[in-house]
Length: 393
Image (tube, rainbow, N blue to C red; front, side, top):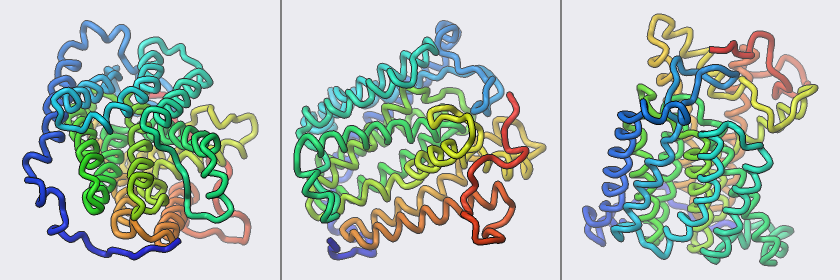
């Protein structure tokens, strides 16, 4: 189902121009101001809540050097709430997102504060949020442009089930890449920016303002998260941001017939590929479960193979923060492809395929120290190479 293709972004069609840009951007600045202020308060007041909120630095996926509050999701919620209450982000669109997103946020925040919420319970609550989104927003994935699948998705029960699965995956995808200062927040900001540009291009001003509000809340959080890592998203923040990113991507395609449903997958290519490859990698490792954390995600390998060695005389905080721009650059590629080809299924699928190939090549280079395999054997590594597993920090 190929549509026309736009290779540039024409400013004259922008709703920022049509609708008075500063007024339209109030959603961004409202959420930014409240989220940044809330983030600063959470850091300032940490001596009162660190007993419950601290993310300690022991474990396979810990790359920071001191205990840090991991309740940054609260600042994002407050920023979005301000955009909602002040009317800067349309309530008809943002309201269902906030209500549905409350479930993944709540279960993630509970895990942040107690460290005692099982994986299945977290998945159950995130899935519950996905179902609530379908009901409240009256939107779900109804088609993907594939003849053999679209008739199934046209059935509401199947379409809703697929949407719930997709949103659960999106929430966990952002949580998986939440490993270094600015990584999850920066990648999410890039994805949302791509979606906002497309929403603006097709004239969906209401959704664009919601996207701007979410971008503002994340930007406010990033002031304290990057580069010094004074505050972390935590599971609550990561689940919430991932859930809302996925929901907004679905809304963009389902509300606007000119937008290909493949936009959601392409814009979110980096976290999506990280989840899929992690499941594949762990399933091939004897004694490993796909839900079990390990230390060989792509961002961890970038840290060990590149930033830790090239910046070996820098501080731990500097090496941590320097890792994220490498992954931002990778995530920006498919996000740009989504903007350029938002109405062309064929080019979007090609972009997703190229992103997957690039992921595999980079991963191989970081683990096997070569770009291509020496033989015809499957070239994606099935398990971590010797020496790749991290030591506790």
